[in-house]
Amino acid sequence: MIKIFLADDHAIVRQGLKKILAEESGMKVMGEASTAEEALNLVRSDSCDVLLLDVTMPGRSGLDIIKDLKQIAPKMHILVLSMHPEAQFAVRVLRAGGSGYLTKDSAPEEIVKAIRKVSLGGKYVSAALAEWLATLSEADIKKPPHERLSDREFQIMRMIAHGKSVSEIAVQLSLSIKTISTYRTRVLDKMKLRSNAELARYAVEHHLIE
Image (cartoon, rainbow, N blue to C red):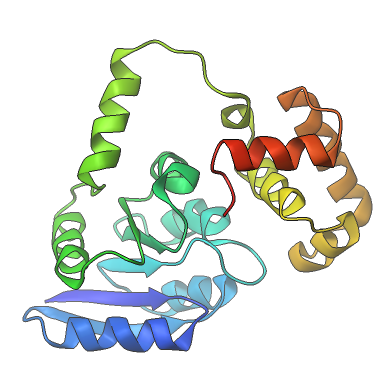
């Protein structure tokens, strides 16, 4: 029996996943969470084989807590199920310790297939992403500027590109305005950009935001 936790801030998504998984033999949803902190507490209080994790939730993001989750439960496999295209987050998820990445428009049978694969210790990415990763490994190309950012810098970069102010980001991430301003300066410096407008243009051109 594959024991599964669900972590997504949308109740309708969790209900849909539970319905899909209830029809599969050998799988059982053991618990669910709607925020990153709830996901951490859930994993601390009980064990599961696979955690289906949304990468963008209120407060700390799913990407932000993957390393913490792996420290709490090293044997647990994390499969990210996100609304964001693979190009935005998939590589970062895998680097952080995730076992796979799927978009929420994936077919139910693909989600089930991915759960079964990662539960056995495998990695799961779409065929398109696997081909892209193979191309990257074969060609020794220079990383684009946004790949130089840390996960936190990448998160803040996307929020700025979406038009959020420093104070809005500070409230959402529970950090000080000074800290967010420091991150913003660091992001612009690493990406060799001069303004929020240039950053937003870059993010759109590289499909880092919708």
